[in-house]
Each structure stands twice: as structure tokens, then as C-alpha cells.
Image (cartoon, rainbow, N blue to C red):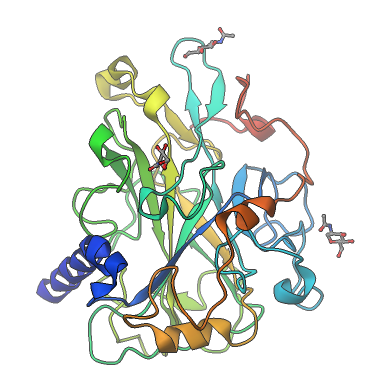
Length: 363
Ligand SMILES: *[C@@H]1O[C@H](CO)[C@@H](O)[C@H](O)[C@H]1NC(C)=O
Ligand SMILES: *[C@@H]1O[C@H](CO)[C@@H](O)[C@H](O)[C@H]1NC(C)=O
Ligand SMILES: *[C@@H]1O[C@H](CO)[C@@H](O)[C@H](O)[C@H]1NC(C)=O
């Protein structure tokens, strides 16, 4: 559709304006974007498998250190329970997590966790320590009404489906971008999940890394903080994963659009020999060699009113990590906020594992 193409072009242009925006001449500034260092890599999932450790597959988690095996909103209030956050915006104690990616050696079948790396667009502000995630909170990029209503305490959601092994219908909300060596720093050009990005894993070596993007729905039913499938209380605007200012009548409340960028350092796994005969060597921690099953989990935990203040203030003075109505902590302080594994095991960062953690079957 022409209008959604326009929207993508508009966002692409905004992201391309980063360099000028950083020098203070931004025109487009409809998002917060900030780095979050790794909190813990472990098999827990308080959204899908509360109370269980270890859970079926490996996750990489960032945000408030109140992250726990169980996060019942009746007993855990992230801003009150956390002592620190691994995110640069220090009033954000939310938790953000995704599945890890492993390299499976075509030579001997053992597995190594693909290291994460810093997002080049934020380099210099968050030091490179095990990557972490880059988080966006975006206002609508098209339409005239920019107002968004921030989610309520206890809100959580999931997008994507680990059981998927083929392309989901509709516009691309979760995707992979294969980076050339020269794109390692800035992550390439174009809007998130544009035509150069794929739902599946790239079918060629990515010497500059892979940037995975997860775009969450931006429309909420306004009532339920969660739903049995963790999805039905939220919806995408029809026609495009990236939000405009219209929401369906079933989900009328426009919330900030959450987006993750995860940078994977595939430079040591980019041997063209691994990519012969339609094969590729990467597998998600839940056993998916296609990449279609990529998904993201979100648990809201901002300090009272802080995110709404920022969303209302977005503009030339409040943009990306720099927003005067919010508190910013140093990259060093964000990196200091880590959590010991509760489900203790070797996640295969430095050693080769005989099988995927949890004995997950590769399929
Ligand atoms: C996890 O939650 C339990 C129950 O609320 C609490 O006792 C425990 O201290 C928490 N653990 C960590 C590591 O935060
Ligand atoms: C398995 O293969 C990888 C390279 O693909 C190599 O680095 C590793 O040492 C090998 N492990 C064993 C046990 O041979
Ligand atoms: C980040 O900056 C450091 C120091 O300038 C550099 O060595 C490193 O390669 C950069 N990393 C990325 C991903 O841009």
C-alpha cells in the first residue's frame, strides 16, 4: 500500500538523519532509543513459563534487576523491587528479552552462542559488554495525532511465535538484516524490516553481523494487562507493523511502539563454506534453523509517569537517549547492573556445547 510505503520511507529518512540529529539539527525525533547492557543470559521466562527454572530455551535479558523466575504483578513492582537497571535511561526497570542464537558447527555438530555486540549507532555511550539490546519507544510516524498513552504497571506482551517455521502472513514485524563488513558500525540504511531484511535467517554469510529487529504491536485493548496467549490484548495497526495514528476499534488505545534491535556478531561464523547448498549454520535457542520463530518478550516497569513525560516531550530536545525530562545513567553504571543466573548452566559463550541448552531438538 502506498501509504505504508510512505511511512517506511519516512522512518528510513528519520533514521538516516541520525548523524545530523546528533549535532542538534534534528527534524524527526519521534522516538526514544537507548542501550541496555546484558542483565543475565539464562533459561527463565516469567511471562510464558512463570515459576519454572530452567525453562525450555535460552534467553538474553536486559533491564531492571527485579527480573525473576516469577513476576506476578501483585507481588513484584519493578521500579520498587529493583536496585538497578542495565538500561541507560535509569527510570526504566522494564525487562526485555529474546531467544539467543547459536552457531552449529557443520564440521562436528557442536554449538556456540553467537556473541552479541554493541549497536554502532549507540557506540561510545554504552560500552560493548556482551551486547545487550537497543530499545526504542516510538510515536506514530504517520498521521497527525502523535499522542500515545503509556501502558499501565503490570502490562506485558509477547510478539512472534517460536513454533513458526514459515513466513507469517502480514507485514514484517520481526526480521534479520545481514550486514556487510562496512555496515558493522551503523547497521545499514533503510527502515526497520524493510525490503532488504528477511523474516528468516540470512542465506549468506554476514561478516558485519546480523541485526535482528523486533517490532511490537502499538494498539492496546485498554483493559487487560496481559492475555492467555500474551498477545490478544494488543494489535498491530492494519497494513503495517510500524505505527500510524489509527488503531482498530477492538484495540483503540495507541501505546508507544516498542522495538528491539539485537546485534549479533557473526564475523567468526561467516565462512562461505557454511552457506553451501541452501544451508546456513545458525539456530535459535529453541531449535529453529529457519529464523521464522524469532520472538520477543516485554514486561513494563517504568517509574511512575516517566515514560509518559518523555513521550509527551519528544521533539528536538528530547530524542534518542537524550531527553531532559528523563534521567540518564552512564554506560559504566548500566553495565554494572547484572544478575546471577538463577537457572545455572554453561550457556556456550566460550565453550562448545554438545547440545543446545535444555537438550532442545534442532528442527
Ligand atoms: C526472586 O523472587 C523471590 C520471591 O519473591 C525472592 O525471594 C528472591 O529473592 C528473588 N530472587 C532474586 C535473585 O531476585
Ligand atoms: C568443532 O568445530 C569447531 C569449528 O566449526 C571448532 O572450533 C571446534 O573446536 C570443534 N570441536 C571439536 C570438539 O572438535
Ligand atoms: C565501538 O567503539 C570502539 C572504540 O572506538 C571500537 O573499537 C569498536 O569497534 C566500536 N564498535 C562498534 C560496534 O562500533
